[in-house]
Image (cartoon, rainbow, N blue to C red; front, side, top):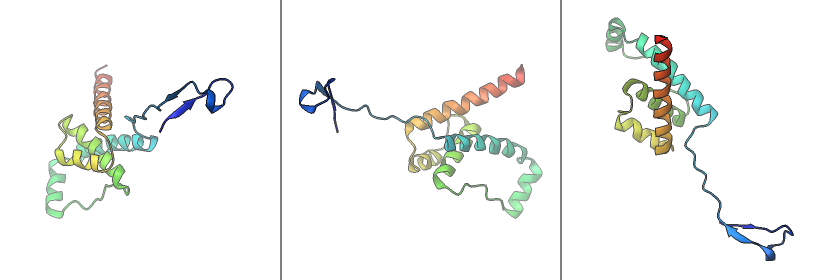
Length: 130
């Protein structure tokens, strides 16, 4: 699709040129999706608290009865990816990345998410050291 650039008179016969629209590149997330990334940060801190030996033993014996997943599969894929980045850095497992892309997210959004989570981790560490 192309758009005509009109001169000051405004009729199409006096059009000055044809200009194609710039493609919209979305590297970021919506407000709701950023909220899910913040929820993943809270989940990561809760995971550290629940990873004690006794808790692990109980989960092995009784199973994990909690369902921490989000109702929206797209947002759940985003949350799981953010959690994986918090736990493993840029070495995200392939199945998590595949689910992230299957949910409709792009490679550029994955890069944005990795940089955002790593920046948050570094800034929190610096805040604790100060």
